[in-house]
Length: 422
Ligand code: NDP
Figure 1 (cartoon, rainbow, N blue to C red):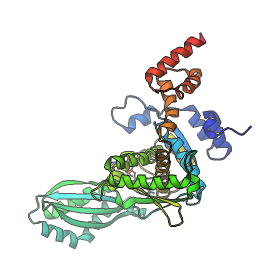
Figure 2: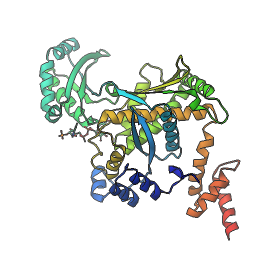
Figure 3: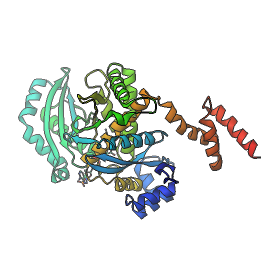
Figure 4: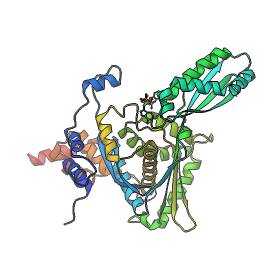
């Protein structure tokens, strides 16, 4: 008899496996096993008007190979098929040597916008001539980030719509996502410019179009490793290329193409305590930067017939700040993932996004995604109609054979099951 697969183990056995394979400490496994809620002190201090806690499952994508290193990637997600798809992609990519990633640079951007200036050209020239002064203002506003080797790097000044004076600030936030750092610096610069030039400060804040933190991940696959029961790998590869081409010219498809990518990206972002709204805003603004909303990945056939995939996505994530140091489950997730800096974390997240896209496209252009999804949806449906722990398995077995997978069918099957067991 072969050993059961990781997904076939019970939760307790999975935790024991991770401890036995030195992926998780015994203390962290015990923490996850207990499922302790946050203390009132932590929960109440994180948000206003806190009235309770909200649970989501945390799972793991096994053996994701990125730049030659193997990661156990934590995911927090409510959609049943996401981790199964990510594992499927991780396996295919492992057979092909893994993902390669790099983050070209890692800076955040802030915008300071003033209006009601008597002469915008004069104002623009003043900013250009007073860069040193503004640099000193930024350093004084946030000295600790300067000590850490970061801070304001550059100021670009433009007149927008013959109305607005805009200062675009490039800021190195080191290991933090940096919204608070950027906002502090922006506000200080805005006050300085206004005190010298007059006018009105319209806004001074970070932009979530974090194009200074674009991360690239690539993968090259032998078509044979993409084969399904019905289709040869070469056909699957060609169809993946075509499906991506279609997304480039069809906005409704591009939106869903990118949603599939964000299934994986957001789940890791959430598990690692990062701000998923910021990541979503950045990703979609990057996809739309040409004026035509585009897929975040590209898939092409190389001259040797191999399939080459690439994702480009802004990933302004942090290793410190926000809720990262506060939430115990986030700290366990970081210890499981074992990344050492924000660049490395961004690389893993980009790889997961590319893999998620690969798994979705492969399923779409071959069997369709419902087949895989429905097996998992059947379980959710069984729980939703009130199946108890012992009823779930037989009910799911029946539901996966059913013609119509819906609440009415599940309710009827459950009633029948209970009747038979009477
Ligand atoms: P924090 O202000 O929580 O954390 C940043 C601080 O961490 C730094 O100022 C620094 O303080 C400390 N730190 C410790 N080690 C390092 C290091 N190696 N590199 C950098 N900083 C370090 O968070 P952020 O500024 O990162 O802001 C992120 C938070 O802001 C998130 O919660 C996000 O949701 C929220 N936010 C997002 C917005 C948006 O996206 N539009 C807008 C507003 C807020 P010190 O040097 O003093 O130790």
